[in-house]
Image 1 (cartoon, rainbow over the protein chains, first blue to last red):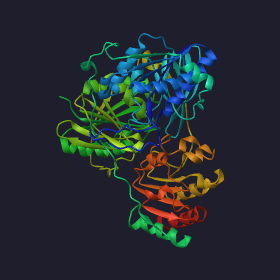
Image 2 (cartoon, chains in turn red, purple):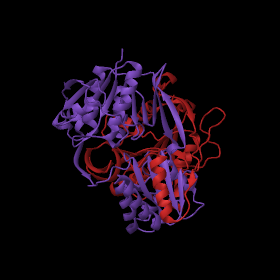
Image 3 (tube, rainbow over the protein chains, first blue to last red):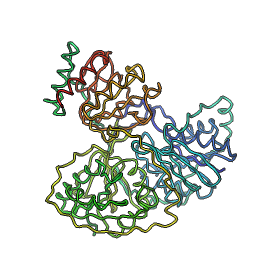
Image 4 (cartoon, one colour):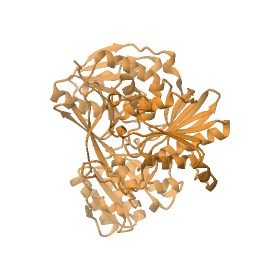
Length: 257
Length: 328
């Protein structure tokens, strides 16, 4: 089975976000991790390989340092990687990134493409689904259970307030979410092996894109940091008084109850 | 010339989702500001009866696409049908709720239309040069991105609870247009077999205006009944922190935070939740936060509008009684 995992390197969930002097998100000094939702995709890809044979290819977009996250995926068990790295990626939107990824996948076979349902940095959740559209394959999002049989997959997807059972023909794009599996930690042997695995770095020119081809359709005008919430008032006293006082404040001050 | 603000109305079992009413209400305001018509699009089967209600929330025109193949949502069929009506109608903007359906449909629809998409917006304003500008939380609410697009139509998904629902106006009458669905085999490569919605009297977590949430301080699965009783008195949903999910006390679908649900209720009551940065990211845009925790140093108090240092097992039942009196 040919398995592709689209993954992203993101800030650690502990990271505090500040803007640099140009008003951009400051990346200096931030610890980087594999996007947590992509870990489920990598793990599921490796499990499919273990069950059906084949290869897991991890694909990512970003700066040269993304290789670290990709090597971790390889240490978990992915076989090879393609990193699309180019300074021009900085100003691309989700539309362009999906087009670029699709081009990079045009030369490799795939039966299933896995990706996290959302990245915890941009929180957009668009690229994997757009990729399915470019590749003209179906997609199923927010999957918590995946069973593959031949050229069909039966998946359980999270919906508001419950789940939906979907049957999808392969190849397909599946986005993964918490609950699908418990991602493994890389073993020492895995880490050793990962260093020798093939990781190709390609530029936009290699893929045949010019700057005009990937001009964004959605523009980020600026970033801002929300006003920090301030600690409000403490309600102190006997429990009975505290309950009564909170009720009063929620009614009279907050006008909720 | 592109025309109109379109709202994709989401219904489930012929009930209009609250977020769709929020979008119609806000859409009406933008329509009045810009002089554009407000158009509602309803897809499904046996849904014609919904038009009257949609009309009272401000739609000038309602496009109804009623087909048994649309009775349940599938990505392929909804994308195809909407792509066709949008190409024909050439709206300025198309807005969807950032629900399970919206998150799945909007990226695919945007790509088929060859346009951008502003996902999970919490702010939307008219803009002199780009028609609309959007604000969306990134890094799980630790920062905002401000977006505009000069490509038409502008697509956006809007987070539930970002805008209030206006009072319906029964005197409004909308023009109703029926369109037919054309769905081909290519649209049916992913087929819905079954939907399992857990029966619950409580509102869905991401749509709830009030959430009562519990963390490690709940000490066990059996104690969440205290929060359920409190929530039921005030029509709230019950959420939890990651700690309570990891301990196996609550199902994953109730987790609020960076790797769970992002919520924006009017009132969030955090019980026995320490307030890790990942949890605050998921609920920090709540309008009012109440924290009950026995540790006076708990981080949750730094964001709480009303903080109670004390034993939740003593205070929560008293709150239930007190709120019962107030709302009863």
